[in-house]
Picture 1 (cartoon, rainbow, N blue to C red):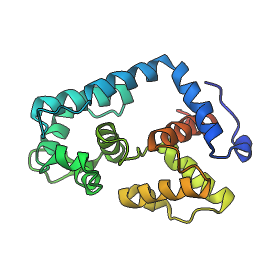
Picture 2: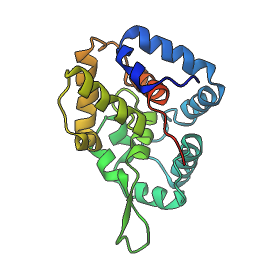
Picture 3: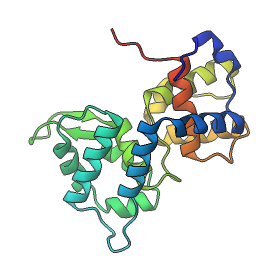
Picture 4: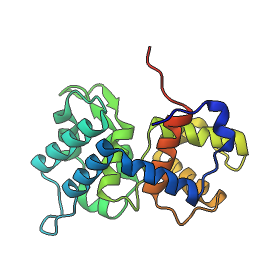
Length: 206
């Protein structure tokens, strides 16, 4: 994937054409496309079950963690935390946005005195169950939304609003309206912003 200089960001405009461009690019990235196809099969709704049992969660969380390289070193603690959320499967199917806030803070010990914030992972988990209701948050989407706000002045929000899931979803919806791309799905928007973010604002590791 080619890297562009941040100064070229002035030429980027969220649009159906850009979304199609990045979607076609996405389809050439075999690693990501194959992972997406595998996740779609794994997260396919099961008509015979209205809940998620421990084995379901362990397989799904482990696979998400591996494919997205989210560096969760104790997936089982995530699974145990998710097991404690009432009506998890039903609420995801209904698009209950409060779930992300319930899922994100995972205890790091049995005592539960400390937690780690796996916000992005929680959005990915919900989105793969119900893509129409849950947009995905990650650092590149965060960066792109802030840069669009600062450049075009079409959006108003505080940086911390992106870490509040209801506000984040609202910002994504307002961004689609501001740029006339309400016909794009959350997944199309996510892929466009994620790939554009990697091009214009790549993370450099020292």
